[in-house]
Length: 504
Ligand SMILES: Nc1ncnc2c1ncn2[C@@H]1O[C@H](COP(=O)(O)OP(=O)(O)O)[C@@H](O)[C@H]1O
Ligand SMILES: [Mg+2]
Image (cartoon, rainbow, N blue to C red; front, side, top):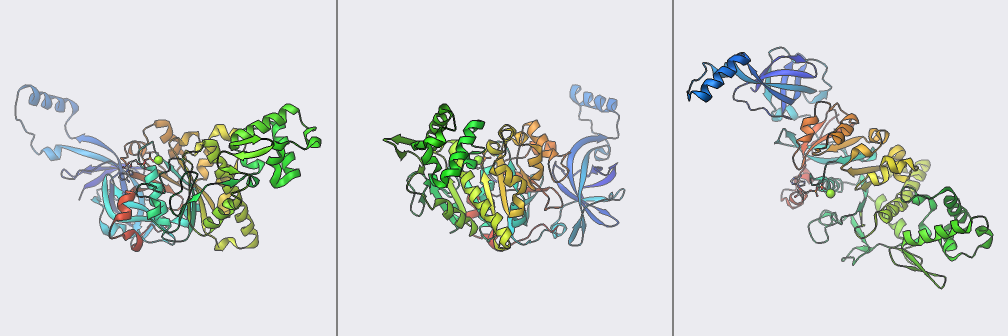
């Protein structure tokens, strides 16, 4: 037994801790009600005493000043710890419900036992989140959610640097690739996911495809995209064009379709040119050359980067094919500018989104896997300042992707700069340690479950410790994320065979 219920309110049940139980913040406990056991979580601890403050001060003074080994009679009876708990769930045999009643007065509060978590089971399309965590103790039970539901309704992974966001992302993909319910497009600005020179997703599954602009290792592909695949709309979220510039882009696109960029750069169309200021066309031309890293010489276009006039025709559709086949396509963008990285993401996402919209019309969508777009530093495309300049394909996916089985996995240290509306649209949030109060506030306010009492718990999450709040879970689940390298090399590979999960 860990304690006894003595007072409080529904959202803050006060428990007197038994003297030998050492409760901690975040710890999971149970208590009896007439309807079953309630699962509770500690969110605060305070001192309690039968002695008055004055007496306590006096006794302390005697101990401190007169070197006296005075001991209180029945010390455990008189001084104790009070724990504040919030109810998470009502456990009824193997089903769980939202808890709506208080535990009985004086009911015993117990530490979590394995039989209390029988409700954790293997869902369809299992996605391993990690071990259940009770405070800082790891419970020997895996937590799973339905990955197809989770990924199609978007995921936010938030923490400050070094708390384990990338490791978590790798673990999620590793788990999802054991099944075929989701493909992943990973824009990788740190070239850390594939594992060029270390353990990485390449060691996880045969379903990992790697594109890099630099020295592709054996089995990898060179990242080259033909400029005919670019549409003016792909620049939304990448760069800002003035209205006349935009009009020029679209006018060339309407007339020349796939050849529109060449037509602007080579400048032979006098009739179209005459519709715009000479300066406008000149600026558009200069900016396109610079953005796409192209060079013009004797009216010939040369490629200095990943965009090419001749090669790379099938890259975008190859990638979309792979995504439709539940593969993880990793694009090494470490040597690209942030703008080009986003442009690449925008081109591929638009292709895929277009295909999936079409599948919805033809009725084929139900047989397709979800496709998730993994975005590091997500505010680059979902930040308030970017979206003020207009929507882009990523904000569009955030808004309506779920209807088409296209989801975002937004990774960020700064959830507060993502508009509320978008945050609220993200079904699952995985919160690792966040020290900055405004960031915690933004995430707490947009969570699927009430985390208003968890501010301290979030601030004190250690590396790899997370709280998962999801519309697909009945409560905010505390988990410990495994370390990717350990997960992948673990001999038992029990993540492959043994699935338990959250039943909702
Ligand atoms: N779940 C975990 N368990 C143990 N150590 C971890 C865990 N996640 C991350 N780490 C450690 O922290 C380091 C930083 O993790 P990383 O995922 O790169 O953080 P972020 O992407 O948030 O900056 C890793 O190199 C690893 O050593
Ligand atoms: Mg990282």
